[in-house]
Length: 594
Image (cartoon, rainbow, N blue to C red; front, side):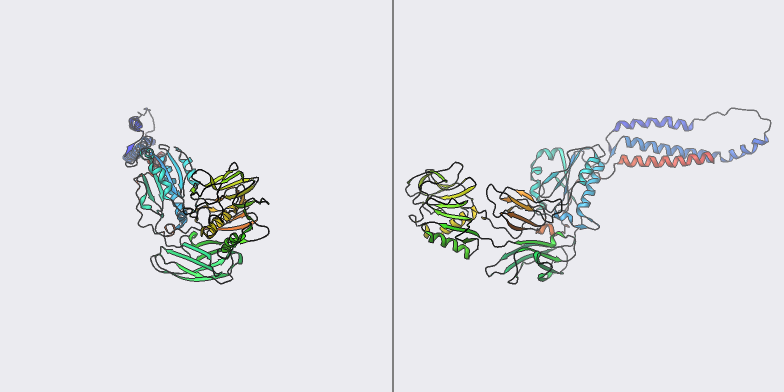
């Protein structure tokens, strides 16, 4: 044991006058009396109890000595050896698995209790900061010496649906300043991927015991070519023995109807994946797969899956050579169903040469003459090879231009602000996107006939990529996303807005208005809804992480060095001093009346 304020130990010198007061005897004044027989009985009783009184006075002195010593030691502020006096970062894991029940409380509640005990033990003599971590680190307080302020910061930590990401610790793990001047205490159950790869300067305080749990760790639902819905899932178990349970599949819009009841015989660990087909009349929309079983963790018992309705992009062809363009559109109409050939009310118009109707969204091949999409068009260049400027652009993502020669390409000057995707070796734009007055066009600077591009397998791919990109449909929604993922907003157009409704909204949760093509990170489990151009798109969010579901943290080893918890030794010394003083006071009053 050491003392933080050893100068107060000099106060022990005050024990000398304290002892002198007890041993100091006051000489009684002598008085003559004429009635000795009245005092004779008193003198005899005093002689009989003098030894007892001396012992009682000595006990009182010892009690006062003990109380005084306790107060002096408390003022000297003792601490136990082994607890390094560095600034602390108390990092509380509030990831999804921390919501699992550990007896009567959740793991997060137990982590917060442990954090409070550490904050109380600081006793104003050591600085600490409080933060929470799941997907990223969020500070609840700065470095402070106030236990009350730190406890209030701990109380602010709420459970999250994010799985734990060890990447969130990278910045602190690589910062030598934190390693030298701070101790980083991670209060966690250790149920996360790569838990054995914590940075060396992190001290893990293990929270929670192994828990028995079932969880859905993978799921998918897709519309199959025959029109039925296919359902795929995988279960994981942290039970030590086989467990029997049921998995029910329901469509939210059709009420309580169970579309599929799947009996489960779950073995410990991750189980084999299973696939089922639903009835032909199974609708699109919001679906839930639920494990009907009580276990330690509820969040992974439900998978929320969304099957979006088929909404093809309507495309019209305004070109002299209509056949090849229409064939390309029809091939995707019969296949994925994402494009649809129309003659009225199109969303996208494919033009050749100069468009006369100037639609809101258009794809222009073989540019020539005057147009709002270029300043000038010159002579035809010789056959040239393309040079891609934006490799991963949605228009080019599935297109192989390495073997394509842009025959018939003209020298062209795009309008200001155009985004060039492909150019020639001389810098002449070959494919670019341009916008003006709320309208957008994708210009493809080549002659499909002269280059025989019509007969290339990449021609319909380019038509598809251009149409879906302009319509904001280049990326399909997945049936399910994990918390922390971002999701594309179908139908979002540059310069527009979309509305997002959060899962399980309350009266206070108003829909969000966004102006980006992607939304995220998704923070909650359940169903989101995206609304663009009057269309509603459901989006499912589910945990589906085996590390968060397999709650057996028996192999996790606590690495924290000794750290003080609870009230400091000085606090308990003051309590002891008060109790001793009460005991001495009772003894004193009994002596006075005894």
